Length: 220
Length: 104
Image (cartoon, rainbow over all chains, first blue to last red; front, side, top):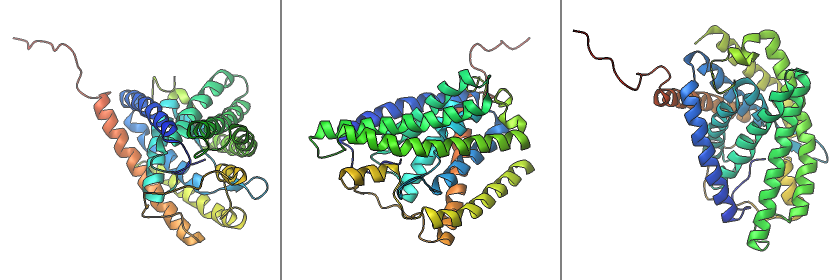
């Protein structure tokens, strides 16, 4: 879901940058106040793991593929603010060093994968986690990917409308296609996230127990 | 670094090595959801004004090396940025506000 340069209208790119800069600044402020040295390696390891996981696309249907986004995983383990910071770093490195995602489109990529993915995952996971944890993890992962894809479809449709068809995709096609593919990708994301968290719960239960993670005020 | 994190790092690298052949077998060179949407709809072709120094590679060995490079760069960048943020945020830094007067 990394948006390359050249497909979104400039005004949509500008809105993406504006929203992303404000939210990233707030997230960085919050993380700076609450981060604890003890858990910095965990955050770094999780971010690096998400980067590597995003390299490995999995097949969905009709020759199309998708990859783990990881916003739900990062959010459930570390909270939405830390997740946004993680995604800011990952997406900048992907765009600058590996050419994955456009530099002008970086604001939109941050918005779709980092911000929407993290906030939606948190909003879905938090009220459900006490009842059935695996279902909550799956729902949070699935919803975060679909929400990010639908926001991306909105951006494609808005770009088409704003530019008279020079950029973007007609809104109906954007919603139908992005929705269809990402419902399937989201299912993969949900399965992987549930698996990773179940494994972590077994081998490192203190890491998964959010209240023990020293990002107080970020995860609690 | 805690031994636990070293073991976790090695485990992640091992998983990467195990899944890399499957990626090349089933997914390499195929469109993702957004690319497929753009192709289906005849949307605009992506342009690029920035030439990145690396790509994700064209064979498993290249992708493995690039993946390791990215792993190290991302982990290092996150550690550096979080330390800077923490220093600026001042969780353990000097306390702000009124300072007690020195005792006589």
